[in-house]
Length: 175
Image (cartoon, rainbow, N blue to C red; front, side, top):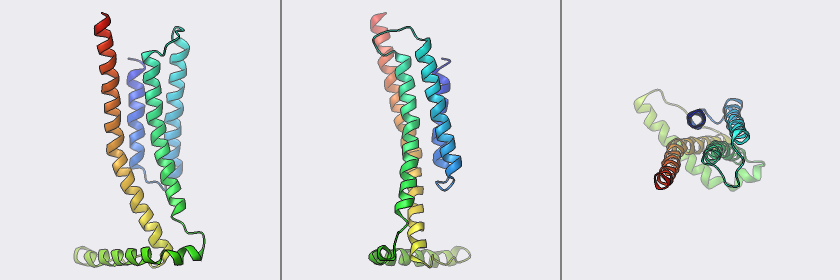
């Protein structure tokens, strides 16, 4: 239990990264890399303390599953950072080619501003095409983080129940 509980807590801590805005690169990446290094350190300790066997031990498999889960959260964040880079047009030609998207974004922002006048202080929609693209990228990033905040724990629970179910079944059959 001295390995199972801490590694699961570190996986849960990686889910908290989905609540940190993607713009906070040092905070979010620092947290994920630290959690990943801690998981690897625990796996190395488990490997060095375990008796040598030709097969993979249950504890080593658990450590690997936990490392993969934290790594998946890190890859998800890398994808979000890549999205923000892709959302920045590198030339005026790219801005001109995305005129239809910009018109749609402008209409959406104008509609949102109209609704906002009824509820609170009106906010003006982003004026430049680049600002509208950045706003759309930010909305997509927030959506991906919300989905990840639900999907990662669900996948982790499935992996955990599958792991324990398999090994309890093996234990009952052998004993």
